[in-house]
Image 1 (cartoon, rainbow, N blue to C red):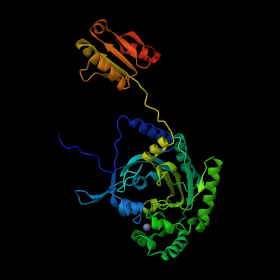
Image 2 (image 1 turned 120 degrees about the horizontal axis):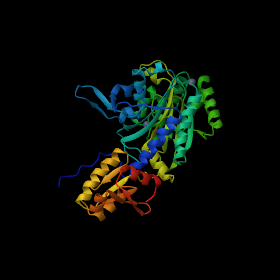
Image 3 (image 1 turned 180 degrees about the vertical axis):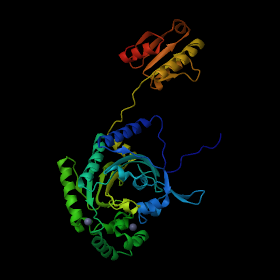
Length: 423
Ligand SMILES: [Zn+2]
Ligand SMILES: [Zn+2]
């Protein structure tokens, strides 16, 4: 036998028997997005590398260590998308979406690619549900985005803590950065090499370094919340008030900075305790500078990303039972050659009428076909033999109750039987 080929490290298969969990989750997310007035957008799996270097930030772990970057045959540097926001912004600018009026409200469900050490729910290829709201500067937009996330997390029965923070804006950041630099300078020799490089350029990035030594030092670092200007402080108060008004519980966590450079003002995370240290099932915030930074007009923006793998793990760990997909349709079993020909003809008729229909494809015995009918999830089985083919009738078996009735071999009559739920 030829040698088997395995899937690459950090990737996963979703098998035909597991996919119902994904269908359920994706349908739930699409439904919540629709209820909040967000429409789906789609964009390419790979983009020019520069989009992420400029859009995600060249001091982030994502850009410095984790991107799948390659040169295409034309000598251009391309990167498999590591996150969805930069692509959404590029598409928003490129397609002139601003002309359609604010706010622009979009969602996507896409695979992202990051070369990092795989862990539970954090794969090199992972799937992200993302929400983006462009053109609304108000804290009500922040609250809406957070409420949307809270709604599907609740629907999946996941007990999370919502943690919110504000990390300031370009007006209040210089004073905060100065305080951070002053603080970290005294530990400069203990910081990891990456963080020493971040000290001048972007000291806030040190706060989410994964090195335990850097994390220890960062614990007592100054907090952005103590440096907020009026433009940042008042909306943060408004956000807290709105979350209280709308029954979304939260706590303040001054340690949240998010791993991407584009965030300003509000940042938030929904944290679940059950998946180990990396328990964030959904995280996001405001990024008012990003659209301008990528060549658009200055436009406020807020959104979040949510990993589907983590969401499904967290729901399962919380005891949520994904409903199996409904049994439906008809399996047409045939007892002999005449029955097989009648089965093929009748399957075609049922499918044309929109009724799922399957027939034996493996030349099995009638008994084996009945087992297959059960396995393939059919709600009814039709048994056709020579006699039935001659009489133009069939025996219909309800797979749930085991009841059998005789029925004319016409799609209309079978649909009647199915609708009545009889047989
Ligand atoms: Zn500010
Ligand atoms: Zn570090």
